[in-house]
Amino acid sequence: MARLQKVFFTCALALLAVYSAHGHGQTMGAASGVVVDYFAPPAIDHGLLVRFSRAPDSAEAQMRSAIRLGNSALDRVGIGGAHYVAGKLIVKFRAGASSASKASALSVASASGSTQPPYANFDVMTIDPGIDAEAAAQALSARPDVEYAQPAYRVHTEFKPNDTFYSKQWNLPDIDMERAWDIQPAAGSNIVVAVLDTGVAYTNVTMKYHASAFRVDATGQVTTDPTATLYPALGDLTLPFVAATELGPSSRFVSPHDFIWDTNLPIDLDGHGTHVSGTIGQLTNNGIGTAGVAFNVKIMPVKVIDSDWDDIFGAPNFGTDDVVARGVRYAADNGAKVINMSIGRTGPAAPAIEDAIKYAVGKGAFVAIAAGNDYEDGNPTEAIADIASRVQGAVAVGAVDQSHARAYYSSTGSYVELAAPGGSFRGFPSEGGILQQTLDLELVETFTSPPSGFVAPRFDALAYFFFIGTSQATPHVSGVAAMLMQQGITDPGTVEAALEKFATDRGAVGRDNEFGFGEINARNTLRGLGLAK
Image: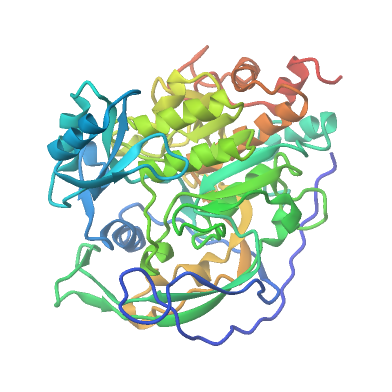
């Protein structure tokens, strides 16, 4: 396939007026996250923006962590440093458990109530936030009427962004996409890929939100200390959101759902989910922007991760194991044949998510999971990626850089089954990452400024940024899986077997803990199955 030319374009836009809305926990005004109109002015496209990556211990990283993890007084740190939301437990009772035994379990956990939310095969118990949820879960797990019990561990995106067209997309030739497109120009047109992430910039809409004040201490943590640095309340805001122009028409998006705000409007307030969606299915061969792997797939945006702005605006839910598990089941129940999970966490096992992934694979959905970015942080086991080692039809994906070496951050372990381009900025120019269109992060991440520069975000502008991480590697696998399914290879286990058998061996000969069975090779996989000459 001929290489695409890059085109820059820019247009002007005036922000809409600011007026009343408020978020969770506010005492006055309308609810935060309210739709004003299913319309927004045309998107601004700021073209290619390059900013250098920041170190993990930078002020920005601390600030992002503080807002996401510290903005809620319910956050706790448990085993292995895993964060969970206090005040609830995820509990699955064994089949046939009586009402009396369930009541007894409530008593053991000192729980005030228990419900089974939609798209869940487990109960969510409400407990006192002061109770050690890990200890309570352990006590419940020992009961014969309980299959598993766990805290609501927080799940996060797995990306290493460099907050910033085809000649710059080294990653696609790297997996032999050009010759794969020669085999299959349609690239998976009738397959639905669910993107479980921070949402997707897929629609034009104007929203009302409320942003309250918060304080940050010297370590970058949100605090109630009255002497800490105050970030001012932005108050009632009306904000336009635009659809990413390079993700295509609204007709390609199916069954969108937001488990963070409990709506059917999973818009992206972060940019991660939009960037991931671009690698899976960015419009291709249209003369502008960047290319995507399976560029005609249907995309199902499923929001299961709360971003910084979701938290600031008072979203009612966090990205925890129960929310992610429900998102997986929702995707499977609504026709997804590939599920991309560029998300993860360390810490204890995630039985609720494992149960959901097995359910999804059983319904015919292939699942790709980011292997994690924590190699230099002690290389802890990634709880969600680890599930893939026990489920045929689900794979954990590590990251390679431009030299085909394991990317420095990419987690290793027996659960890593495949590798794909994730990029690196070490030893490579600033363009060593994975390039896609997303929100203009310069206008989104205003919380990285000092209080004097803290202003309302804008979600009406787009730009092309290089991100790095296993989050960026994973959608390559999802895209190639969608191409296989379009060819008629629809069994998730067979899709996994094909991807692994025809991968390009990297590192030690044979399967290893850095690359798994190797780096995916789109051409080899399609040719290896005799699908085309």
